[in-house]
Structure formats: structure tokens, C-alpha cells
Image (tube, rainbow, N blue to C red; front, side, top):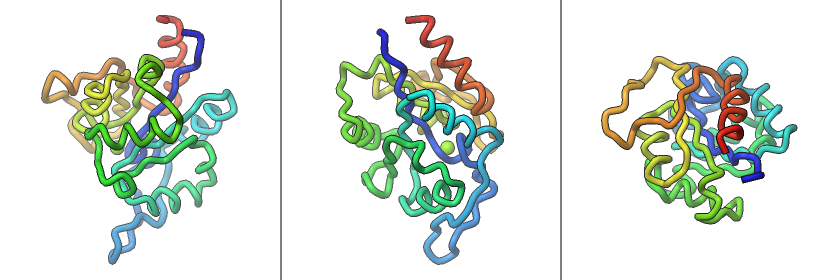
Length: 175
Ligand SMILES: [Mg+2]
């Protein structure tokens, strides 16, 4: 493979600190939220280096446009797939298929795709079942990081957004 990996990535507790979410009490839509340290710099650098980064998040679409609109980094995503828009939540394959369609990707591209997220149940099992590389980011202690089933075991583990670059180097070397 001579192509850069394509990055599917989760939002809550992977790029945005969920504990900082300020929600509208009536709609439950997130109005503002703080990024995880290094997350925005990482998104910008990935875009500048030509990586395709696709947000795949179990959230309402307006929460994404609010949070990444305010922080000025929504342009870093090649596509945004939310559970609200697709009617399916990770680990269901339909939300991953939405990102595939939006980026004109096919099954042949799956060896090039990595999914980064903080949830063994949603992100890792979803990626493993979908047939793409799974990367657990265990920055947040909010959820249990111990796989409960065989399909929740990640291919790689990183600890912060900034480690994505070392990971990409490792993955590209292994090819
Ligand atoms: Mg998450």
C-alpha cells in the first residue's frame, strides 16, 4: 500500500472532553465543550498533511456543528457521520457505511482505514466487526477500557491525540 491511512475518529472523549459538555436542557444538544489537550492541533496537522479524517459519532448533528464550529476546526473533517443523521449508532455498521459512501470508499479500501475511539463497546467492536483497524485511545477514565468480549480487543492502544502521529508511522512502516 502506498496510500496514507484513512482516519475514522470518534468525538466524545476522543477529541472532546465529555465532562465539559454544556447541553441545552430541553434538546440535550451540546452548545459548547472543551477539546482534549492536543486534539485540535492534531486535527489541523492531519488535515495539513493530507490525511482524510472522518468523524463518526453517536451524537446529534447539531452538537457536532456547535462544538467544532465554535472551536474553528469543523473544516478538518472530510465527512461527518452522526447517529442522528444515519439512524444507527456505533457499533452498528450503518454509521461506518455512511462514512464510506461520503468518501467514495469501498471494501478494497478497508485495509487502509483505521478507527480511533475511546469505547471498546462502540468504537473498537464496531471497527473490528466492520473489518478495519481499531485503535483505542484511553485518555479518558470515564468508561471501562477493558474489553468485555473478543471483538472489543483493539489492534492498537494510544493514550492521547498527539500520539496519533507515532501510530500512523508505526502502521505505515508495517505495510
Ligand atoms: Mg467517545
